[in-house]
Image (cartoon, rainbow, N blue to C red):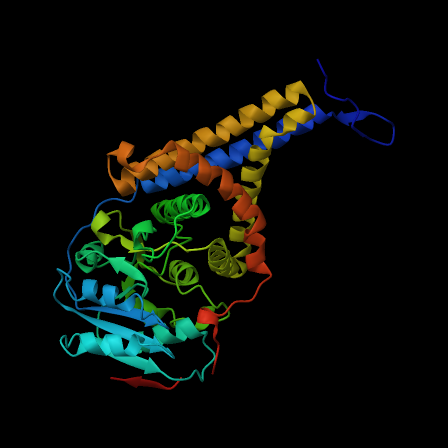
Length: 412
């Protein structure tokens, strides 16, 4: 049996400071402690999310920024015009579309006066395009509560009513879950093995994002959210100065805005666990589109606070180290036992958090929503994804819909 090589690290007198085995034990133990503590805190936060009070029924403005969305805007408007909630308007901001987006909106508008179309023909201010489009929508709105989704999404008919039920007089922001649904992919999609595997991972990765969002909000930290399913008071938008303080990022109309509200205001932030508030969206059709999408999302992290950057770096580094426990056995048999134990701790904590989140977000029929193969695929690929794709978000520049032309909005 091989033994740990001794005197790997020595001082000037040749005294052994730590041998390789001790270093590995310290590395894996500290990584496991940090990783498991984070997972347990997220699980605890999710269990503190509570129930919707359902105390207010204000006038609501639904705002959608759309650019070349002729393939999906019709289905979204069909859902939005059939909501169970009654007091609302729909504002579509057509941002320099070159397809039939405007014509489709106008066809709905002709039979439903609640729909308002704003057309942006050029950009003349210093806000990034999407933030500019959303700002134009907010400026044209009349609602006390603003609800946001994307043009390629599909909310349920109870979306507005359910999301609003999470507000009370103290709540300023409500965040919702937006899962990927492969059935929303175009009919001509060829589901090869690779695409099916990618789809499983994208769905699992988005669920992980929901766990981080919900768990952090339950802990009163509110780190992350998605703009595809988000609602906040108009008063909140005005209080923080809109997107002016976060205009340096092309994205961030969700995460950075949420963090701004947490730091700059006294409003409560809540996460909706009601399934009727979920907003479905289609996963990326190809790996390259998924990578571009995720690099853009990671790029927002450049503008997180230094403590947040440190926290996320240590968490993902710990995840990688525990994963490497599978391969450390090539050094010695003893290290193989330590490495496998470390990896087992990681998987156990991942499983605990995933099952907790499945119970809270997706209902108590865990067998229906939890699949061990999808779980393992997500956990393994998630490490590779964060290690290889995550850093690209910090070194790459991005544009919304591949255009940053220089706002002359018109309302129809």
